[in-house]
Length: 130
Ligand code: HEC
Image 1 (cartoon, rainbow, N blue to C red):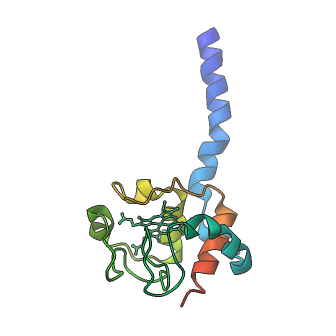
Image 2 (spheres, protein in one colour; image 1 turned 60 degrees about the vertical axis):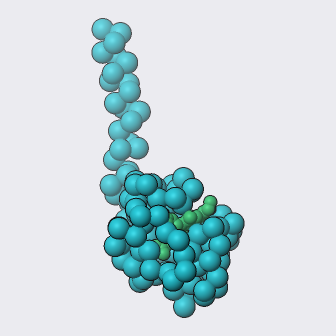
Image 3 (spheres, rainbow, N blue to C red; image 1 turned 45 degrees about the vertical axis):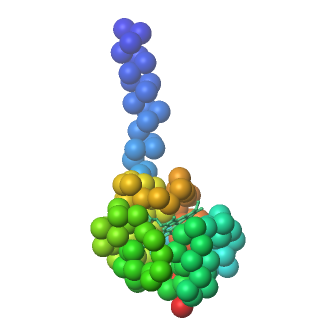
């Protein structure tokens, strides 16, 4: 009986989190590029917004719309190159939630950005890098 109660409680606690996950869609959020520039601070340690400037990570200039693993002169992991992902805003929205889930084996040491509004802002900012 106690076990059963615990199981029911666990389900009740987990349910809202589970229900939210698939409902997250970029189209439900309005991205603000100015707010996104601040979110980008977390990426700047490894990524430059300038064209041709690769750091620990590839330059993110023009990233929206380009194919994964396509920056010249950057030594990508095989996982990233083999992904052939088109970095559309929707794909970036999924990727940035959990990069290692979308690209297993990636060398990008970034756990992910759970807040969907912040991801939408960040993607709006990335869209200005062109
Ligand atoms: C600790 C360093 C680090 C941080 C922090 C980091 N990245 Fe990365 N990122 C990388 C590396 C390294 C790669 C290349 C991964 C590979 O080859 O597997 C990468 C790859 C990427 C790619 C794929 C690029 C391509 O050309 O295919 C995107 C998009 C990206 N990062 C966006 C971001 C964003 C946005 C942030 C901030 C929220 C961020 N990254 C934070 C290191 C980092």
